[in-house]
Amino acid sequence: MQSDYKDIPFSKAIMTALFIGIVDTVVCLAFNLAYRGITGFPLSAFINVSTLIFAVNLLFPVIGILYFLFTKAFRKGDILFIIVFALLTIFFSWKAEGIHRSPVHALTVQFRGLLLGIIIILGGTAAFLLPLLYRSKRFEEQVL
Image 1: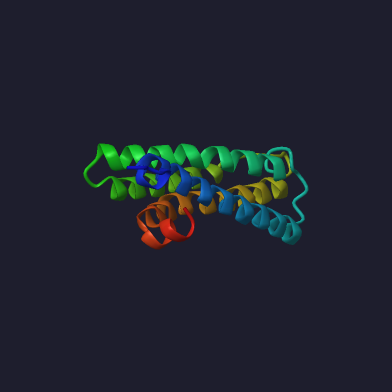
Image 2: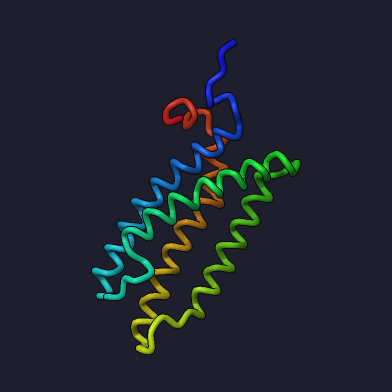
């Protein structure tokens, strides 16, 4: 009997998370471009095209591994994963509100808005879209 990666839950979790990471990269880049266009936020030392591409695409396979571990370690791993990542999103959003990026208050407020948007995009898709797509037969057949 021949096996492919779809039969292995670990690979499915990684591939699903990687797919979401690629989509999130595009969404975050679009958000970054739109936000900077609307607000005129000029600083790009921390959040820029290259950091978004690399950070998001390195982060999501790790999130996929965590999702796999949650589903294997706990009876209601999906629900626990959603709760933990929703709480992490809320926590990081709260912490982002306290960041001081620049001595110029307006730039700090703009940076917070940009960072908060990215945290919400990444946290929301990790918490809710990953479990949904992982369990979706249609996603598995059409994409994976």
